[in-house]
Image 1 (cartoon, rainbow over the protein chains, first blue to last red):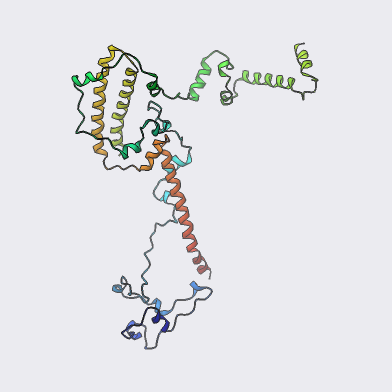
Image 2 (cartoon, one colour):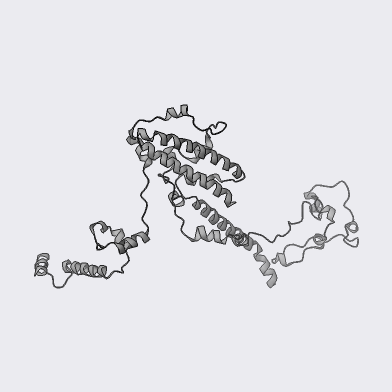
Length: 244
Length: 112
């Protein structure tokens, strides 16, 4: 008790008797027990358990200990709950995080013409520049009169090469469904010089029997020309034998 | 809420289409296309008037500035939404871990 008063300075008034604080008889309160190994399991001293009155709760010195306030009330919603399920955002989460979201802006706005995947800094068409330097607007939008339209008389002929690039759109990827339909309609065999791309070959499904036969033939040719083939001594011998 | 955006989407699409057609006329301008050019220019002005009217309904909507950075780089703005959700989930898990570690001694109390 003496150390306790020394920490917070000597008080002019003598401390009130224990009876005034509602602790019972006039005996001095016992010192708080030292914290044991199982600290939380020990019962707190009776002085700390006595609850102060409601009026004294909010003040700094209202409780039994100076600056000890009541803990904030427990709320039902804490960080331990899954807030996504709490706010019914599971569908939105699965939509954006479950599936793969395409990175390009043209996938978000497929109908917008022009090269929109390029950074805005190239064309000075960035939104950031619009916010930092907003254009000076007039009062309202007025239609262009006949005299003003005379200023829009252009020279005949195509645009110069510098301005032509703005009109070019990126090539649109063909859908797989259209690709399949074109296969069934065309009477031309699938292996044409135009279909020699390796990527297209990998994407095509192995359903046609013609493709299977041609693949087998290719494998046979490779095996004939390979040095590991048992019947072949040299490449010339192999070619002469194949001709026969 | 979505009706406001629908009301804005239509004039925007028409405006973009007008601009595209204007670009086609200008790319290979002929004397006979002067009338069409002046008509398209007036359509552009009318389109801007319609868009300006739609903005009055959308004054209470706020857009985070970080989305503009995504658009300026040519990226899909849905990636920003995805990143926000992932960050929220990560923070939620972090806070849950902290709460669980602070509540851990209570399990000892129950067993004792």
